[in-house]
Length: 504
Ligand SMILES: Nc1ncnc2c1ncn2[C@@H]1O[C@H](COP(=O)(O)OP(=O)(O)OP(=O)(O)O)[C@@H](O)[C@H]1O
Ligand SMILES: [Mg+2]
Image (cartoon, rainbow, N blue to C red):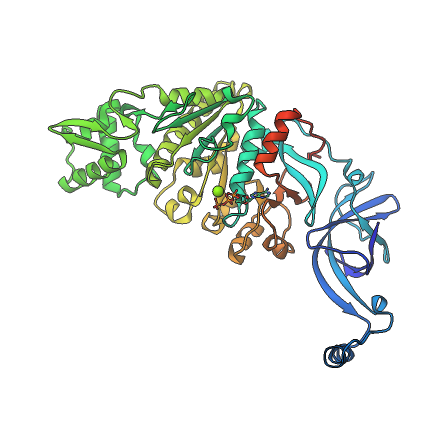
């Protein structure tokens, strides 16, 4: 169906007159068939146009408002809308990049499923949603090459309530059916497992979902306990702020007492030949006791929380081997303070990263699934302010994880708080609606594709509507994420019919 006709423009901005009977929306995809070539374009702005001078228009309007019904002759010919289009892709036999202008006066039509037949299903498809043209959801699924996407990091920025958690639930559900990735999910809202309501526990392959919680584990879940001897000084990096002498204090105890370092530090056992300022030890001690939720009673250490003197010897090892088997490890951190959550996340992440580094050295890495770490409110560990106090395991992974098949999925409302170089390293961004301009700018500036004209479109995204911009897609793809409830129901019935991806 013809939507309009090209009337002006330049390479990045093609102006189309919209046919009066047609509706056109921001973000809509349209097609120009031009001989051998087919151009796919996207609407990024809409304005009014008229053959009648502004003064006359205003006069007609005045007569209309003040004196009743008054019509312009040939109204649909004289008044119209103009849509600004940016070319996103050319489909031709010879080249795939857009380097030409479509012919002048070319007819512009609606996009159809067949226009996308060049898109094929990638290896290890990661399902994200359906292709979307404006607010119209198309019968065409979009999947990305899962292994590459996960190891090269994913950013999910959006304002609150735009559907980040819903998208994450869908992604996790989809990955659970596959075997190419181990997922570590730090879940501060305890929303993914589905303790109450639908969640990953309801997946047909629920044996691949491992759930750790500190309180009342439901059937099939495990109690989260970590033995205190498993702690290392670097695990505290990013979780609590320590001055240089305080950090040195941790390291000295670790060096001297190895596995028993926390206990001996809390008991203030002296290290021969090393003298700490008394204050340093007592401050460090206080910080550890409060973070680890320990008590000392008559010289006896008591644990109230996750960190235990006796239990939890194997927890970390177990989690890591689950991840290495391509399973999903969900840790319910909803009971913890932010710093404790980060601490626990750091422990598991550090361990799995070290293992994968080792596998790389010994040539076994190819046999392992990718591991992806899901971080909610990512600026808590990747924020500029946090990183000013020193690097931590998460930013190490953001910088070099992909070499070792370990990646991050960073979810955030405030992408601008994450340093630019880390944002740029996140090679796939699934952008949902973002209300604040400064946050949109941060994402647009660090996107693999040019989104400079899409500011308005991103601002107008509704719940579940997204843009996928990725080094693994040929253009920034508008998608509609399904509602998790419906997605999970459907996936149970039809086992994975996916017909499209953008891996070109
Ligand atoms: N793809 C979707 N389609 C339709 N509705 C959706 C979609 N995604 C989310 N919603 C609706 O929006 C609500 C909020 O979604 P969600 O909890 O995923 O947002 P969020 O971005 O995680 O918010 P928060 O910042 O509070 O964590 C959901 O309860 C659901 O009703
Ligand atoms: Mg959420």
